Image (cartoon, rainbow, N blue to C red):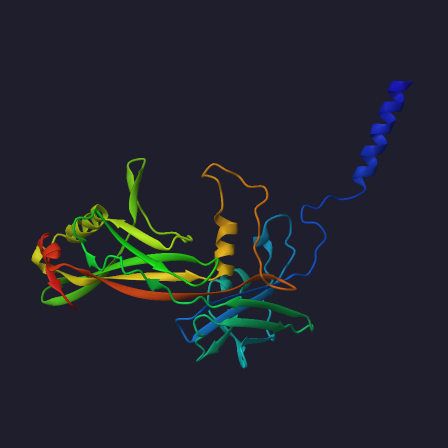
Length: 319
């Protein structure tokens, strides 16, 4: 009797469970997505806005209806000045998926001031408002102890350090070497991005480039620069037909607190074998999700000694 009762309870629970369909996506709710990264080094700013959608099953790429929103009123405040963004379209990859041009908003002739606060407000066609704010980072001050010539005397690494008045900002850097190949009397310009190091995986060598961090400085081993200099002549010309510009450009990009937090939330893992079940989706957009951030870029030129260039058999140039 007990066995029959137990089987009956299991059967009832099974039937009750089958009456409600299970959905891995939950109850659909409209969420508005706003993204705009303000570049203080240009006078052309852009933004995109869209809404959430429900796809068939669990594959988001089954959706073929463009979720982008047009006709919104987007304005940016920097103090007492208001800048209005207008919507437009451009041919792009969205045409493959949605069979329609890519939609975005833009404002021309607007270059924000370093170390200033910006607020954005979006009035959607349905009357809802989305808001966010960012602080444009300030410029950095290069430390007097930084190396300005390459190679530095009696040192095995080139170091550049800086200070900032901002809190919670991150930095990333890029070193660029310019050189020319002289072919049939024509000067052909090339550039090499200098990595911080190299790593070998399964016999294949890969460059390692700087990643955003809160470190207020960068360091490059001279041996890495030597390796890059040697690689320039791999195309097989006479070494005297390679002209090396006697300046290396260092770009320092300062990410505001919002961009820094976004990067951390998407890259803060313990190691390459870790799986995070609580992966965070950073957003600083009120009444929606997305990101409103900003960055600034500074450039510094480091001088390459002529003797160093000529030690590889190359020709120095100031072009």
